[in-house]
Length: 93
Image 1: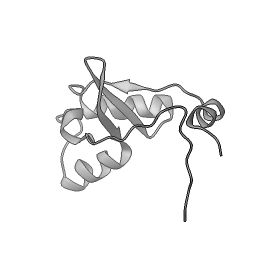
Image 2: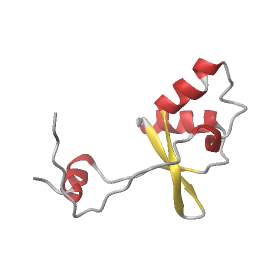
Image 3: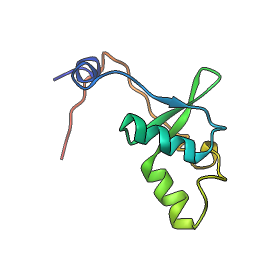
Image 4: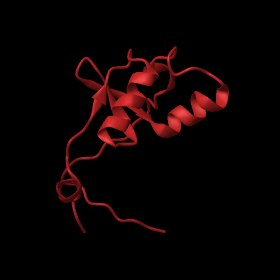
């Protein structure tokens, strides 16, 4: 089994971040620019959550809200699970 470190080495380990006070439209533009589907939300150097295209679709578009008016903190997923680089994973279907 590969460790998380090995998986990241093959995929790339760069993590793109955004502040919780940024507007959702800024997050969407940044995700498009970096060609990623999610960003880590960092507040004061600590992980505060994640914002993803799914968060945007479900919490903005489907509710008829505007990405220009809403801050990232309002739609981010705040319960984020983390792993250590030395951990391995067993996938079960």
